[in-house]
View 1 (cartoon, one colour):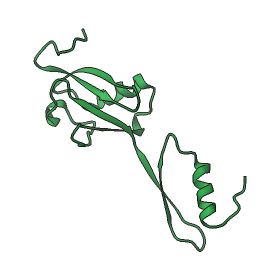
View 2 (view 1 turned 120 degrees about the vertical axis):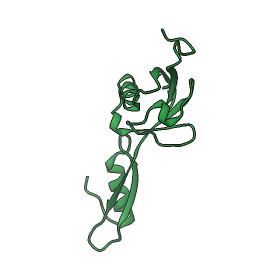
View 3 (view 1 turned 90 degrees about the vertical axis):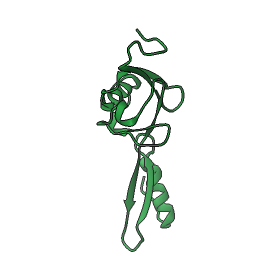
View 4 (view 1 turned 135 degrees about the vertical axis):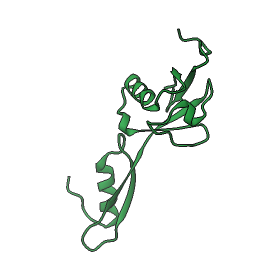
Length: 126
């Protein structure tokens, strides 16, 4: 069933490109909500869908309610998938607010704590 071109005119093949070699292809209808593609991609890659962000080749962020038609996707187009970043604000007694941008699934909190302690010349407890 998966051919290089879609079999019917109301269907198309879109590709989702992630980090490394995680490119997957999906046959969808023009009216398929992108949330179905997100769920399928995350499931096949064993990822948490809530940690992912999808964009068109032009950099437009894709929402779950978008469709191929609403995004003006063409057969063979590629969506880019990346992990979302998280911003954490840390404040302590007598210091300015510090901001850290971290990758939720990869950044160890101990690394952020160590940096915070170093900036304030503290001896972090282990």
